[in-house]
Image 1 (cartoon, rainbow, N blue to C red):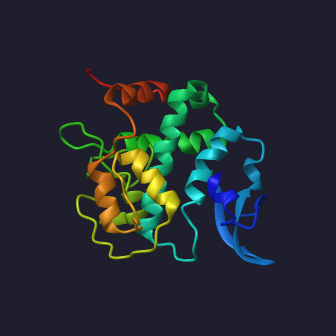
Image 2 (cartoon, rainbow, N blue to C red):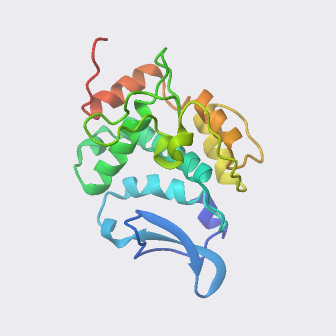
Length: 216
């Protein structure tokens, strides 16, 4: 909300977004400032769920968007959704379209773990969405990075960051980034420091999402 109040965007509206996107940032017809447009399909969703997407869209403040930027923004808004469910557990079982989309993406993030069970972003697993995708999705990062989303990210693309990126990175990684960019280096940071929830909170989220915990 501070980003919007600071005048970064011309307006925030409901309207067509194309390609089924929940929201997007695009040019304004009457201003050099961009507009955030939410898909009118989700007009009557719980506003708190729209807030998760809001956090994602404020990370896009210039015309340059690359796979690294989408990977980072997506991981940060999944962490936001996870925190939201911990504070408002009933949102996990709304069964609306937006709730299911957010829950599925959060499941992919929670299931991206290394051999010690630590939360990662791009560590390869057999699949992070069992019974849901063909071919199997090996990691959360693979959603946007494809074959570069595994153990090594070879995507060289970089786009500029902003104050919102520094803010969300700080809350998610417990680091103090200043001037972070949407780059493989920032993906490395997120891959190494997914500190947005404690282990017991991740178990709570898995139960809220009705996931199979296996032997505990």
